[in-house]
Amino acid sequence: MPSYKAPLREMQFILFDVLKVDDPNNGVPAYAEMGQDVIAAVLEEASRFSEEVLQPLNHSGDEEGCTFHDGAVTTPKGFKAAYEKFVEGGWSAIACGAEHGGQGVPNAVNFAFEEMISSANLAFGLFPGLTHAAHNALLAHGSAELKQTYLPKLVDGTWLGTMCLTEPHCGTDLGLLRTRAEPLSDGSFLLNGTKIFISAGEHDLTENIIHLVLARLPDAPPGIRGISLFVCPKFLPLPDDKLGARNPVVCGSIEKKMGIKASPTCVMNFDGAKAWLVGVPNKGMTAMFTMMNLARLMVGIQGLGIAEAAYQGGLSYARNRLQMRAPTGAKYPNLAADPLIVHPDIRRLLMRMKTMTEGCRALAMWIGNEHDIAIGHHDASRREAADDLVALMTPVVKAMLTDHGFNAANDGVQIFGGHGYIREWGMEQLVRDARITQLYEGTNGIQALDLVARKLTMGTGRVARRFFHPVAAYLELNAATADLAEFITPVAKAFSRLQQATLWLGTAGTANPDDAASAATDYLRLFGLVAIGYMWCRMTETALALNKKKEDSFYASKIACARFYMAKILPETGSLLINITAGSKAVMALSEEHF
Image (cartoon, rainbow, N blue to C red; front, side, top):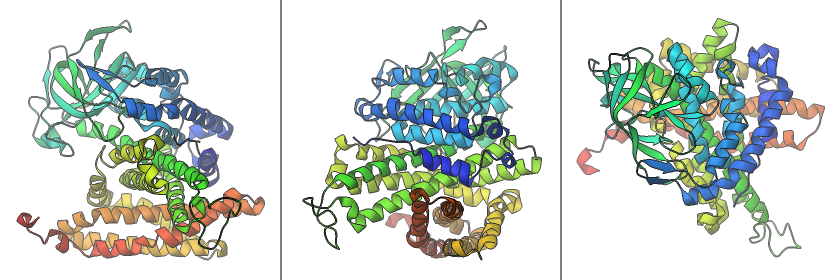
């Protein structure tokens, strides 16, 4: 089985050296209050928990899976004890505000912790994963009474939360949902309907489960304008902080899935289940997106975690597996054959995994830091700019990181050869677990449509300019810097392609919506590759400066990876531009009956 070591130095390099999150000029009070030493200690403890408690349960949890009987779900052996340690360590409260018992750790730091969990045991991470999203929805839209009832126990981990959106007949198109909410005289509601694909909808880890449910009021208008959000507990809370009657929200079954088998994916039946309105009637989509947007970023982090685990597993195997001699002659003449890592094709796979993983991590932490700025900066204009950037980049982070996670897992299997296909080695599990990240919380195709159809046009282009303007300014500022020229030049060329593609979408894509829709996936990838290239420039700039002060192989490896990215990955932007501007004619030419 592959082992896992949290990439602490990588994380600290991005947080402290590149993003300088602890600099007072960053404008996030939480960083200034905690300081670099405290944040480093939090990450160290998080790595220990992930490596020693979660990772050893990953393979056994996958083998055993969850069991279902008469509406009850039993988690795999060791999961309940691991969750108890999770709560005892205060990890459930790490990113929540102090006003409800949380620790107030900034999002960028929490992203690092979420990556560790996802590398060590993605299925376990799904239990507490959506609780933070549910917490944020209640915090932003719930009444004072709902906050007082639910937030403290969601924060301390006594209760876990879910998101109940999808129904058997509707997934992305939530305007079709049928779950009904009947008002009662006491101000509560009775929910009736069925939700599917509910992660951790039922389990034995906590005494109560709090469901955030989308449903329709009797007089609701059709479509998404008639959706409201409700909170519906498994057990009804009592005023004395005890649990009351069992609410008729019951798990009807759990899915038999390709991966994440230690996390139950539930069918939830609401048969007159008591619930309370969250926010404004018929405005549930606004509250839902408070949950969904954070959840999408977290799913991107899941893809990143899988990629890191796959890279570490592939690297370890490549260093130890002896196969043939290097093309240029024996590198280890004292051995019967050379290890796989000397072979150029294996190096190609490892370099792609390493370089993309480090670039994706930098991109995610940058957006995590902007999320913190959007919440806590003292300057309202800076908060708005950061909030715009996070909105723009959310579909990019979700899609790029999960696509990379799946690709890296596949490359890990390739490095293992036939052994990668065998379950006991653990690599094929990463492929199966990674695949769902490209699907849930909005498929990556939906992320691409969101970017092209919504985000680029928001605020009459204001949101898009939050990325284009600072990147253009950075490239122009550093174009004449001798040490950076070999990195700035290819990114500037790729950035020009992105500008051309964006202009094309604004003209041809507007005239023919099929052109925009058919180009969306390629456009998102082009956007993502440029964004990662921009982060590689920033990392390289930092590494060059630090290496001059103190030569270190860590910084030298950063520079080598940046060169690989510019030479072997970024050129893909050229073919993407060609595909984008080819339009939809070839895509739409075939009549339906000829498929």
